[in-house]
Length: 314
Length: 259
Image (cartoon, rainbow over all chains, first blue to last red):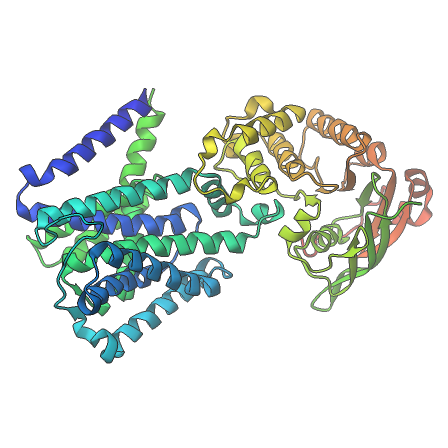
């Protein structure tokens, strides 16, 4: 029964998202595009954190490298957008494989610090390697051409681009969700709860952690690739450690215990930011207060707290 | 005598200047049940940690079926057929009881590498897990969250997870500690029937002498990291040093070095 209600709510939300450009003002098309992309970024982080139990502070590296990959390919090679995105996924995965290779052997705070350190290195490279990355100006001035696959889409139209983003995010989210529900996903959750017991069941915990970390990087790379045409620039800020904090905050705001938690957190984060900055400069103060209250009283996040309460109810 | 399944040679572990385990040499025969007794701090858990790969010995060797497994990581040793329980419950508390067993079975059957199946529809694992839980008389708890079942049931669940890896050599670390007399009887009966099935070799550390004497084919008495005596229960019972050092005496130090 409740399963059906949840599925129904999800369906209504999806229909609402598809129909958005026909009833919402332009401004909100931009907002929701950003929510979707950042939600995917946060969900890719939550595979690493919420499922596998690794608190990464360097997840922006994969998001940023995905963004640069699409931006630079559009600028220099003028590839169809789809191929750029494939490249972004590969770039995110490859960088995560390399960083993860060194990081997943450490635990807890040491893992967090090492991912932070790697994230800072990647930021520094993008910031100082001017001949390739154009330094702090970033990669700009690229235009979207074809989508690929012979599809005739006017990607420059924000409503069209929104729909493209929606399709990619929904498909990617579905794939992430299914991975979480697979036997592999079950092992990841077991590792979060008790890595030692998993090792004594005969599994190499380090390989599974590296696989999760690399997958997280791949999906973050896709989110970054989708972000490039939206922002019209790939800049070092996207690789900054403060960008790594965003999926952490979004996951905690929405709740790490349910798959859609990070998406809800992304919506909370971006909507609050939009509304509060229109009233006052001190948006970080309000974010801080909301976050403190969530951590103190609603540790399962907004979606998590609600669903826990609703599913427990008879 | 047949080839020993486990052969321990001069096994030693130092922590700083202290020897937690010192020069243990021992052969374990296939299908026997060997109990390890000794006061807290005698080095029993450290001994287990070295056999199961949780700790690397300072000196000495561990051979499994004649193959050197000294210092291999736990997952490799587990794959070779050695499984262990812990003194403190070591389960997946947020999962259901049956999912706990499914994790071990997924590892065993390599379902852990499947990325696009639905774990909740994996009937092969579920049926096997359920059968194992029934065998341990906790089948009725299958759908309960493992974190909320009783202490004794958690210990039974851990034994189920240990058995799910299909080990040939099982290391149980104080399996009845903290159990009610009824639960203790259940565990003792279970280990006895498993031992009688001839599929398993057991090492058991245990404080309850009744359990020890009802299960053990042989007993290893450890004292301050050393093997005081190895022998049949009757030999151990009669041994004067054992009587003085362990059985019935109270003045032992209580700290558990390296637990």
